[in-house]
Image (cartoon, rainbow, N blue to C red; front, side, top):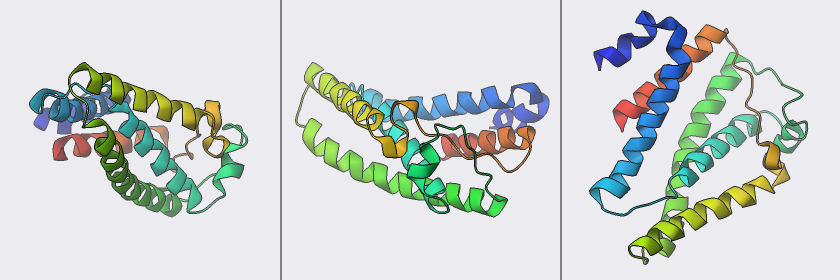
Length: 174
């Protein structure tokens, strides 16, 4: 715990890499719950990672701007959010994304938890691939080009520290 708290202070050049590390630790913890402790070898956990990311970003942008117009330029046009807009948008987006992922999990869980063994793994992989294909064809969220995140209102070092703390706290709480 102390290493996680002091890592960005001791190694400030690697703050972003540590944030990605905490995100991957969080992802591994979620797989461990289903695949390790429950014995279900799931290959579709990335569905919830992607759904949460897209939902959070759509909510963050949609609170203040038209999402379709924002994504139509494939990130070429960046709208600067005020710090209030950015942080309230991301907070609301995280909460709504969490609830939406629970709803998605209930729907897909009802479908795939009837499968056993390798069929469960293949079913979860199929659901994740199908979801990726559907989002890739949906122009509202940027289609195959993806969605462009709003600019962080602070400096680059502040952005890295914010996302480090967000990923660190999320991993510790999990």
